[in-house]
Length: 485
Image (cartoon, rainbow, N blue to C red; front, side, top):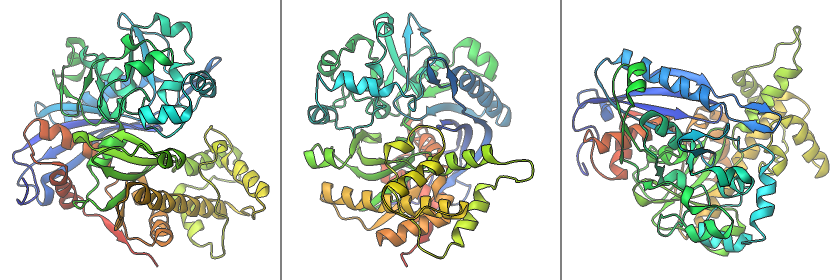
């Protein structure tokens, strides 16, 4: 498609299952060469919450409920486009998994915010220290990386004969195919970023049976058709295709940048800030700076830093909702952002990556504690708290972009913000101001769009490389631009 008008080669309808850390959705993508710029239109057919459940042994994902919602969402998609849906792809958050034995799930998958992960770090690092681990897997040290989580499983790990990450587990329930899609497998800490293959020697070294790791597949690979019982519920035997099943991998596909000198921020619950490279950066400087090398679509490397993200806002709002009374209605996000925009004085910029902000709970109280510990002014109103969060995130994004450019030896001319954060005008402008670079915002549904585009290319609806796919995004979903002030 290079050099041609961006758009699909032929018409077709596909479904994207896009599961985030707080909600999930099923979205139809309608590809039509005659549908105007880009030829891609989205239709939301299902949206549902993703609420974790705390049991006596910890915090878990309610994966059975998510699976039920996925089935109902696919059935809704078939009703919206009867007989038209060509297939489906699934993406979700990273690192979390289910352990299986003979196809049976051994307990509810843990949530990455569960406190048990620290014990995994203590068990892994005596066998392979942080520097040696980074040299082998290229991942930013995060205590919830899969390698650390698996190290806490104890006897359950000995019972398991397979481990499947969340999107792979859902695809297995849909089709019966056991596979690990590479972009998500790259977040486990058990994949060699140079070869894209499992590092079985590392697995053995840290006490994880290499035999439980499933076969690897690339984005675009066919996984199979819906099992008969699933097809009966959905209404038809749809085909399932592997996509960039790590939601950030799919989101990066839909960054509407045809040039290679742009940075990206995939901004949702987390802010994933970085560059797309042709090879990993495995230097000690990159490790110390907290940068990770994750797999991207078409063998690209997502060289990025994980920033705490909009979790800080959503968890603050949850705290204020719990504190609200019948006489005092809790403000909505838009009301709080409007209040924050009216703050004219300076606000404290705090370290959003401080580990204290990772667990669920009273984020405003923790911000106040951070300010007092560092001799900085404590926000006095909710509007000031929100403005402090926004400015702190913007500074973290700007710093991460500058560091990524330095570590990769590549200049950056613009920052693309995709995902939910692209709607936050205050955050986008603050990022432009603090980075001194133009910010290009949108699309909001980048993850679902990237999911759909990988499916469409696999089925011949579109063709070309990633830059060609991104040209379709830029035409179909024109972004907003924010210039530094």
